[in-house]
Length: 269
Ligand SMILES: NC(=O)c1ccc[n+]([C@@H]2O[C@H](COP(=O)([O-])OP(=O)(O)OC[C@H]3O[C@@H](n4cnc5c(N)ncnc54)[C@H](O)[C@@H]3O)[C@@H](O)[C@H]2O)c1
Image 1 (spheres, rainbow, N blue to C red):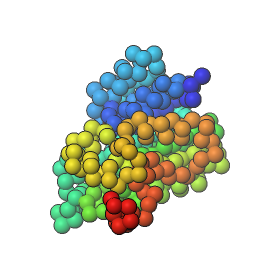
Image 2: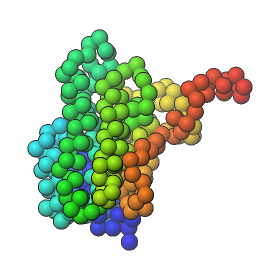
Image 3: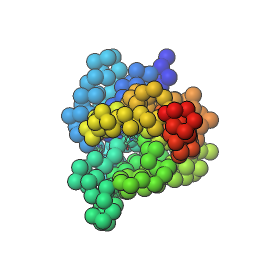
Image 4: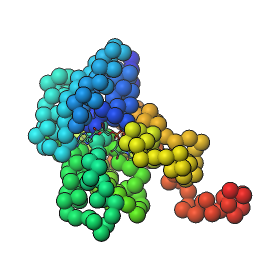
């Protein structure tokens, strides 16, 4: 028996990185997975990988910024698997031109804000709107969001990205409070730097060394490190966990901000 045996799961942004690793991990634990992504081919590749390994998976093209596609995603999960046990909202706004304008407050405008919030916040919240009636009817369900360590403090770039993840944290708790007594849980994972294709694309060995410097573990995170927490939150092992924001961040948030000064001052680096 897997830890997610026969559970009906759907994951967004599952064609790459954390979503892909989670889809593979869910299926290894016996879950039936609807692998969704903006890029159908990427979702199909992951679904093929799962079925080749003996698991159960289907692929679907879903832009989480499009409410009709979110509804179709939930309808498809229920049509394929008969129910919906796990909704993992993981996709993020990835359009390079939008992200670039999010990094300079002086080049900023309402369109940047709306585009990022539409995908990063409403993409998850509206998926919940369509999944919740099924979960409430069943009397059970686990909703997971990929938030970010960026939601916890100010930064000098990615303004709407950080704000969108902070907003998600609020919805996570509000959904947990609204439906927890009826058996539906809602939790978030706040990753630190994780070696996914989108992070590797902008990283250099120097940047990785800087990231490593702020972590309190010996190595950068891998997508599988986040997937491991997602499996726990999807499974009944986490039945007493609701409204939680889990930092899976190599300990980057566990210290006082001046820890590296202390290290240099008292421990020689
Ligand atoms: N990698 C990190 O260091 C890191 C750190 C903190 C938080 N996160 C969060 O983890 C989640 C996954 O990120 P990742 O690093 O695995 O990224 P990734 O780029 O590897 O994967 C993201 C996937 O989302 C898909 N996507 C993009 N726009 C979409 C849309 N509108 N609808 C549906 N799918 C869409 C992409 O096609 C891609 O397959 C994101 O929510 C991100 O904010 C990542």
